[in-house]
Image (tube, rainbow over all chains, first blue to last red; front, top):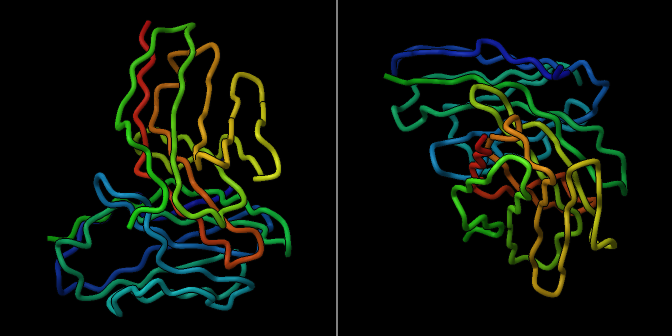
Length: 115
Length: 113
């Protein structure tokens, strides 16, 4: 049902690996987001892209590197992660009309485990 | 400092009865609020929203109430169904900003047969 897809759904990686998470939205939205959800904590906004331009970096460590080649695709490149980075990573998109309230629609998430 | 709080981590309700999920916020600048539902192994699904110019919004079995003076909102589900069993997140936002939503920690609702 969701118009936002994420791959892979599960990922296990070592601390020295490099991997990428992919998100694609089929809703014609202008904005895309990366969130991190750790156990028993609120969703934490990581990055916001609006019309392919990064508009928000919520003090995220540089071992997380986002890329937004167009309004429909969003990547999160991972390198030299730490075990505490293990979490559910969620992608979302929204229409972002100026002056309007904005509803974000989420993908199913990637469950990341860092060994 | 958590600006959006859901103080009840879990709630159990009998099928057919009313479920009331609560959310408190501290930032009086928030001007719209959303509820999301999340099943295991899935992303949050948008459920219902309300603008701060309203105090009630209804969509089928779901009604959201907003009390701005108390900085409190609640989600009512009537009647509750077993398929409603999920984690419910409230979120708050500011119109016209960089679309930053602030989420609560969620309440796990279990609807029992």
